[in-house]
Length: 393
Image (cartoon, rainbow, N blue to C red; front, side):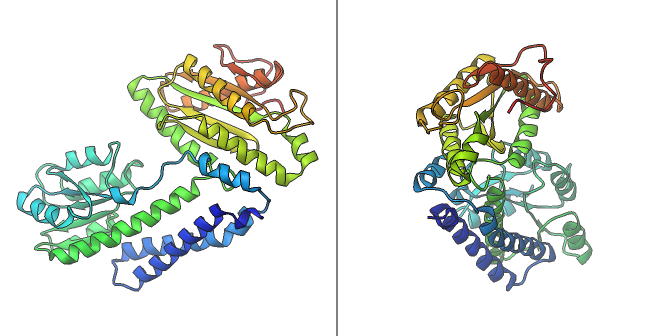
């Protein structure tokens, strides 16, 4: 059975085909220029991903590897039942009317001031859509929209203005600031509900595409791009709270001889099963496991000191050893093993992400030269025998 015929691929194809169909259906309806551009972008991305599936899955994988992929992903699932709408308006009557009209279908959040809206949008559970008034005391809706669009944490949240300002110039200004829609007061509630539904459906499809683009095509764990994004955010978050951030770098021992002698098909199966075992050994929701490149993987461990990092890394090592995957061409054992390097620090600034990576990489270098199939932790002094950014093979 070829890898592109397995359940994972069918699931991706089905999801992408549904996205294409829904996007084409939405584009047949009247939309604002911004909403139409967003729908066209989603459609284009979905078609590109459909076209690239066959190229992304060239190698064979067994049913055991396919089964393992169901455990390997460390990306959060999208829960369509928890979609939320934030209503920002200083008039209680408007808030009540909108909330009563939407509460049966969405989780409704409310803010009466622009500053509170920004606080909610930047929180742990940002809304999927913001209905934003313009004329409010203090920070007006235009200023709120500008702040949301300029903040990487909130720039992806669609904004729909709902305002008593009904001049064409007002609508043009709002849309030029990045809003996806503009509704004038007094509004017709069924129309607002229909527009909210369209934008939420588009957000769901966009989130799904984003999730797909954040996964490694073979192992289905997070990819390097997603890891780099999360690392930047976690460094900033831990720096603000002055909490330790842990990181483990590892790779499969003597993987090149494995590939050379068993073939790339079994090599891919090995990567899939090892990734699944490693991801399965991380049980905390705040942790991230990703494929860093080739046979190298990385784990980002929130709120974890050096002792905790070492303990988790040892659990990861044992998880791979427990697979007992035959490797007759390893100089360490008769089965597949991994070498791991760990580090932990309280970040002081944005550059500490690179410091953590370097420290873990140097520890991995020492683990390899100390005999492999082991965990080594970062020391205060850099390893002078290690070349910056390069580990032993």
